[in-house]
Length: 241
Length: 53
Image (tube, rainbow over the protein chains, first blue to last red):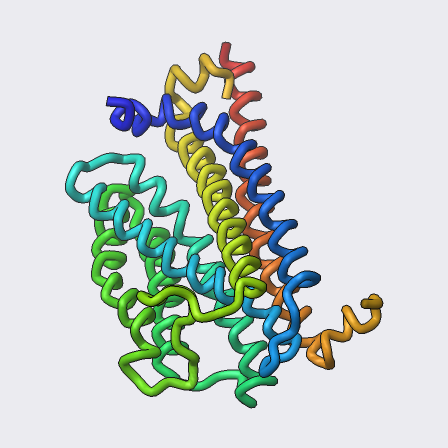
C-alpha cells in the first residue's frame, strides 16, 4: 500500500521535500494573482466601498481557520483508530498555522467592523464561536507542550480537538441560528453564491493561495519534526540530513 | 486610477492596509520561523553526522 509506505518517516521526509518547491511555487503565483484581482480588478462595493477589499483576506482566512481544524480532527480520528505516528506529526504541525488564520480572521474582521458596523467587537454568535476556535487551537498547543510523553500528549490533544469539533457547525450556522450582526453566508450556499464574479474570483483565488501556503508550511514543520525525532536513524544519516 | 487614490482607499486606508499588514506579518512569521528552525536543525545534524563518521 502506497499510503502505508508514505506514512513511514523514511519515505515521507524525501517525498515532502520533493513536493515542497511545487506547492510553494504555485502558492506564490496564486497569491500574486489573488492580490492583483483583489486590489486592482475588483470594484469598490456599493455599500462597503473600498473596505470590501478586507474581505479578500478576511473570508479566506476564516475559511482556512475551519478547514485546518477539520483536517486536524480527521487526522486525530485516523491516528486514534489506526495508530499512525505521522498523523500526530501532522496535527501538531497544523495547530500554529490554524491559530494564525483564526487570528487573522478575527483582527481583519475587527478592522472591517469598526468602519462598517461602528464597533471593533460585538459578542455576536459568529464572532464568539470564532474566538472559541482560537482558544481551542491555543489550548491544544498548550496541552502539547505541557505533556512530556509524546504519545500521551498526542492522545490528550486528539481528545480536545475531537470534542471541539462541535464548534465547527456552530461557527458555520451561527449566522442562521441566531440573529447576528454578522452577515449570512454568500458563497457556501445550497443555492449557489449570491455575490458577483468580480468579488467571487479574487475570493476563491486567495482561498487557494492560503490553502497552498498552509500545505507548504505544514510540510516544512513536519520535516523539521521528523529531523528532530529521527536524528539517530540510519536512513537519515545515510541521506546526509 | 492614480496611486494616491489607490493608497487612500476611499478614506479607509487604515482599515484596508491594516488588514493586509496584519495578514502579511502573521503569515510571514508562519513561513519564516519554521523555515529558519528547519535550516538550523539541518545544519547541526550535518555537522554531527560528519564528525561521527
